[in-house]
Image (cartoon, rainbow, N blue to C red):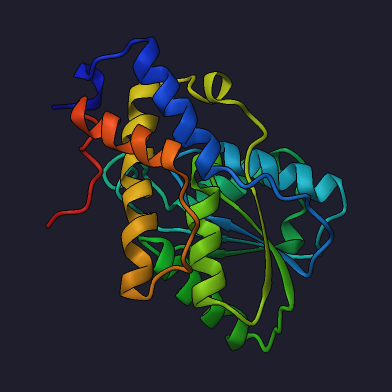
Length: 222
């Protein structure tokens, strides 16, 4: 079933909002050595990068991402290129921008970004990462596991669920992705990809309910 054909009602929306709130961490952002912008199908992460620059949060902005699940065959150029261009159009100076245009998933975002910085002899102690709102928890869990010598903060475009789901990004699509990411939060620590996360009963129930309603298109293959 394609996400455009999935059902939608108040009960489903309430369950979706439960996962939305679970996935968001809403860290209080403080100045750091670098902002790492993780690849995405949503260029609005570039808007958030420009906002952090205006707030004086870091002297370096590293954009990472090639083509992933949602951009392969859709974007004509890499996520890193398109998102960094969005941020620069909004005032981020080109001279403090670096791009890594090859990563295809979060693990590669981390691996290739680390390698790029090391190749330039750059050492980062504190960093801010930017992802989509509903991927804050998963991104932070990955970063703290796979790049543990950096103190990480996480942020995202400052939008609620209804405001976020605009411009071709439907509630059903976001919900389907959130269900898959919730599964990864449960399973990836066992594989060594992420730190363990506490999971409340309400979020577990929302996850199980949404799977029963057909929001299973982003679940991992057995």
